[in-house]
Amino acid sequence: MDIREIEDSNKLNHAIKQHKSTASQAYFNFIKSNLGIGVIVLPFVTYQVGLLWSVVLFIPIAFSCLKSSNFMIEIADDMNIDNILYADIIRQTLGYLWAQVLDIAIILQLIGICIAYLIFLTESLAQSLLQINIEMTKLQCLLITLVIVIPLSFVRKIHFFHSTSKYGFYCALASFCIILYDCQDRISIGNFHMSNLINFKNTFNYVGVAILCCEGIFTVLPIRDSMKNKFEFKSVAAQSLLTAFGISIFLSLISSSTYQADTQSIVLFSIENSILEVLSLILYSISLLLTFPLQIFPAVQIVEQMFQKNMVEIINFNDIEENSNEESPISKNVESSKIEEIIAQEKDDQVFEDRFLQMIIRSLLMIIIYFIAYQVPHLSHFLNLIGSIFGSLLQFCFPVLVHIIYFKNTKTPKPFIQYAIILIVSILAIVLGTAQSLKQLL
Figure 1: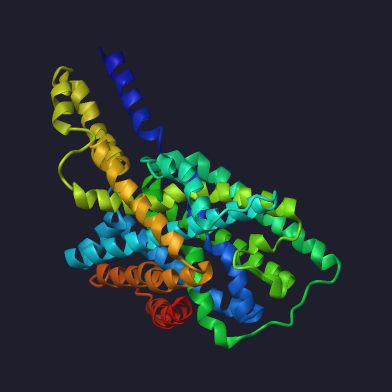
Figure 2 (figure 1 turned 180 degrees about the vertical axis):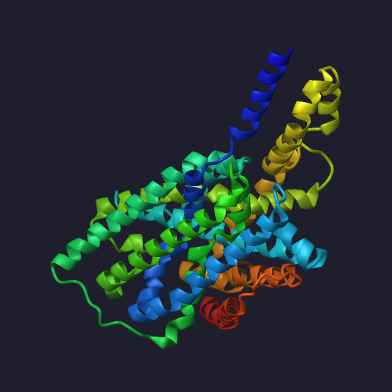
């Protein structure tokens, strides 16, 4: 009997840990959360503001993103609660009303990012087909993307991305390498200029897009909770963010100084060689398709919880308790704490059992996303708007406020200078970035 109980306990331990990610998997997951659509639009706005000025602008944005992510991780580590979400922290520090506001803002930003993904996929498809003399309308291309994107929107387990994020990252890197190869060809014939250094006039065309190069704030806590040792995530997150920032700024500086006035709103369209252009579009499309469900996951999770918060759970504790009564008391003691961890793990992946209702919710979200994607006239201005409003609020303002409130009664040293820098960056982006993008969209 003792041997059987030990074997059962080992199986249960394996069931808990088999889906948990390693530090390496979390690293790739978080990089992919930050290397989205912003990085391929950044060269266009970099050329608009000038090479030197773009670096000056990017540094405080990158600093603010790194620190705000650290603030959320520090709070989660101090709380030491399993499966804690961004909204849970807001609810405990700012109250229920602000948590509702946050939920709505998260949904709107993530929908905005997914809209940007669809615009890219649609334009990429149209451009690729044009290379083989097939011309299609924007609506036709959007409908074709339905076949691929809709099934991905029904992915319900974040663990699915432990492997796919790594391959998505490699696809993105391969696409970036093609851009650099094309740039190298142009540099070899003298097409490289450093004359465009500073243009203050277009400053706030840049800020919102740059903020969306740091769009992974919503996946900070889910990825942290998915780790085998979640207290390692602070250093993993810092390494991931620095990698993403380095790729973004390096690619934007090289490509904008090489393509100059030929820099397209999506830098991949600037590649002269048609075969390389199509190949880079395919690779980056694969990367975004692997990222799309990861980005929409928090929004879907929030909406599902709004509809059916406490109705049905995937694992009913009472059923497990009845089954466990048939086992020995010793076995119950060994497994009772493990059961709770399994329940917490599964609740994070599957909010409720009603699959039909889930399909309806996700289908409605996708219809909204597709409708808006069809109406958006210019990708860079749209990204600037989303980044300026929701990116600033969610990436910068809320993390600073909750960190101030959560640690206000502790003896922990307060980073007031960091607070000030982040809030100044976010307020300027919200006011001036929003005004600039609305002016150009309307």
